[in-house]
Each structure stands twice: as structure tokens, then as C-alpha cells.
Image 1 (cartoon, helix red, strand yellow):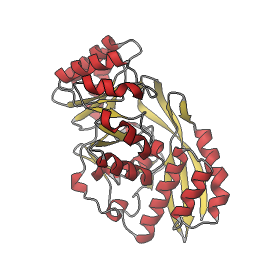
Image 2: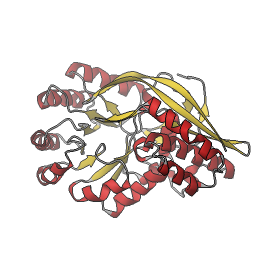
Image 3: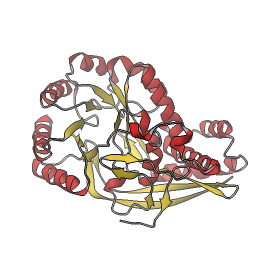
Length: 350
């Protein structure tokens, strides 16, 4: 099979600030796998979890390194492909791009959309949330209005964990709640709280009707999760603390759910393993994203019927998304009926 890579830069309509910094633009990698006249597409986007980072340069170097080894294989040889990627310690975002490209190729080869190959029901897909980044109360109000004028959504994920402390978090959250009257709110601290602050915030947020809190403690502070679980007044989801399926069992007794992302898991194959592992431990499942275009988010949507919560909004916040795939209808992100991922290139449509 032939493997080709191409860089593309995408820009956010609204820059996103979280506890670790602000993102306005990213350069992602478009991976194409070809055989038998069929081309499968995948995407890798850079991301960072504190001191754990996968840069654009790291990802593209890894793909180029294994390209000669994979060129002698067929897209049907998934087990051998996986063995090569494991032996070469290919970073997860690069594996994700290759994995979704292989699935896209398979779907096009058999002329079926992936969700149908997986035997899933689209009518079970839940609405997606859109994200409000850390901001001043006034800025958060404006960002909320901007989102609600741009898309018809009923769920907002509010990023907290402000460097200014939990009092700033409280003021911002109240501003968003007032502006988004009647909307359900979730909170993601991106590891921005101490254990003491997380316990206090969970009680305060629960009284306001917030649905859950995501990643309240920093990655690396998982030993504090049992105490937080004991005192927390809200369900606890983890994101940065849980990359792959083997991370789930040690955390299962002190959390309520996991946020699964294709870039950190290594693609749809591992994401599906994570879903089943989480379910085996009685946990809820969320599907999330980084600075992904419609290409990667349409891949994630193929398994959306398996999730309790969706946070697949990154492509909605792009001013120059070069791809079209999943459609937004009545607050839900839905795959289409085209074979494979169902993604088309549209040259920076706005």
C-alpha cells in the first residue's frame, strides 16, 4: 500500500483557553493510504497533557519512519500493521491517523459507512456539547452568546481551572449559566485544581445543577482520586489521566467515567477497546477531541452510538476546515451514509 502525508493548518473562530494555555491555530497531518484504486484518509492533530506532548513534527517524523515498513503490507493485514507500529513505538496521534485511514479504506472497499459495519444505530447518538474556554465573566458571556448564535445546542462544557483560582472560576461559571439560561452545563478543569479546591468546587457546582466534573485533578495526582471520590458531590470523569484501555482498571473504583479521544488512544481500534473496558467496570463513556478537523471528528462520530456524552465540537469552531463529513442537526453530530468515514475535501470552505 502507498502512504502519503500532507500538512494543513486550521484556525479557530474563537481561541480556546484552558488551564494549561490557549490555542488559536494548529498544523495537523492528513494521512492517505492507497491500494486497489481506493484511498483511505486519516488525521493526526498535535496535543499536550502537561509535560506529555506530541508535536506536529514528532507525528509526521514517526509516520515517515514506518512508511517503508508498511508499504510492503496490505490494508487487510491489520495485525501485522499494529505489530510494526508497536515495535517502532509510534506515538498515539500518528497511530490514530493510520488507523482511521485503514478503516476509511475498508469502508470504501466494501462500500459501507463504518457505523454500519460496526452494527450501530444512529438514533441512539446523544447531543454534543460545545466548549467555553477560560475567560473573564464578561468575555465568557460574549463567548456563550457567540456559540449560541452560531449553532443550536443545548449543552455547554465550561473550562475552569483558572490560574487566578477558584473564585475566578466561580464568577465565570455564574456568568455562563446566566447567559445560557435553560442549557445544561458540564465542567472541565483540565487538571487545574488541588484536591481541596476540587472537593469545594464539586459541592458548589452540584448545588448549581452542573452534571459532572471532568479531570478535576492534574495528571499524575491520581492517588488523590479515592479521597476526591469519597467527598465529591458530582460524578467524576477523567481525561488526561486515562489515555488507553489499560489505564482504566486502576482508576475504575474512584471515577464515574472516561473521556476517550482518538489522538490519545491511538485510533478507533483502541477507542472501541476503551469503551468496552469502561463498560465492564460500570463506567460512563464520553468521546472528545483536541484541535481536530471534520476528518478526525467524523471518524469519532462513527462510534458515537457507544457513548453517553459527546464533546465533538472542535471542527465547529474552525474558520477554515478543509473537510466536510459529519452533519450537525438539532444539536447532534451525525455521520452520513457515504462509505468509509464519509469525508470529502472541500478546500477551506467556511
